[in-house]
Length: 548
Image (cartoon, rainbow, N blue to C red):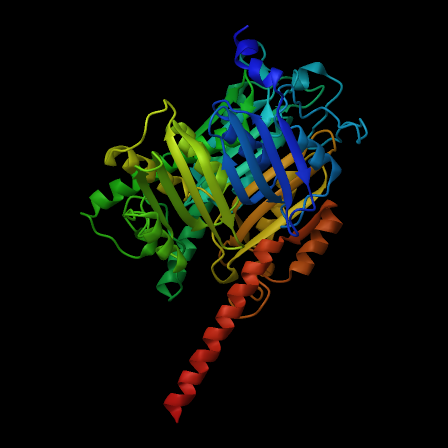
């Protein structure tokens, strides 16, 4: 009864989602027209994010009782959305009864392949309903703490080369289907989230059993990395620079395995996991600073609170001042009450990245801040976001304490995304193809063999289409693994991490998966290489002048 009453207005005035591929030459335009209710903006942005879409531009308006938004979105390759199933899912993102396992009228009703064991038919206990859109899954708990339906694994562990390979292999060996995988790494830590279910026909797995298996794999990885760290220390003594260590030797790790009795909102859970991990890292950094007596060091040992960078640690007095800083490429924020409009004006200039808009609006939602109007503009490098907000209670946000709290939390949210692309040192690759059991750990294993470390990952399985699409942000894991990871690394103008063409051949031949560099990442790398080449020419000219 309560649910029916709360959604009465939406049922009387059902939401309208229109898609137009002719209004913008480079993006698909999504127009959302709906009765406004708390959380509508977060829900829309979350579902677009779950579909692997990037919001390039947006105009948001939810003044009064109505919600009218226009989003210009692109797929992972930076192109217009043309896939029929994706377009159909966009059109239905606000349907109250939307179910990821529904099949669009334009699609066949064939179920998934094995996936990571995924099967949408057969044993009813394997999915136990499995309702939800994209990252929304439903599940339940069987007897004696065993898995039944969709469930969540969350962990914060010390980041080690091959971490995702080992963790996903453990999950698969426990006869679990992997639907979603999200990984974020920062300063020697990695936050990882899996959504899983029991493989059809397999015996239910107990919570403690899976948790012990994961913890054992983590301990084995830590023991193996101790020897590698000793080798890196020896190389450092010979003049090579070792990677930054975690901010505290006694890092705080945890593994949580949970049977979900309600809908699982994957993006929201991952956002909160990252925020929790960020808080732990911040506390560890502060503790390290106290032990050093406030001493600092290099950038890798920066003991300043992680929520505050050199740019976000100070607030611009006006949006105009913040925009002047943004023109210089500086990351900045401005929070200011406007007595004329009676809104609090929030301006953010940041490096563009996946999930940036979702992390921002989810942060505001958690702070009980409602967005009434907003404009979002991005290019291949930076994003400018301007919001006009009030408290969820309808009151105005005026005090310095309230505005300071908003800015502090936004400072954290801006740090939660994929790594930047300085000079092409980070590679962004998409792996896609028909899903099958063991796909994730086999793909992660190939990167490990190539000497590539996974710094950020989003992997999603569409159970109806039987397709998996994964995006990996990769960095060189350091010397000593395989030649492919070292070949050409560090050479100006060379292809990073060896031959991408060769790596693509390996994925096609050994795994039956397509691999390609994403357009945005490729563009950034080319820009970085051009900058490096320009700097090299400038240095040569300076040397020639000095010789003359």
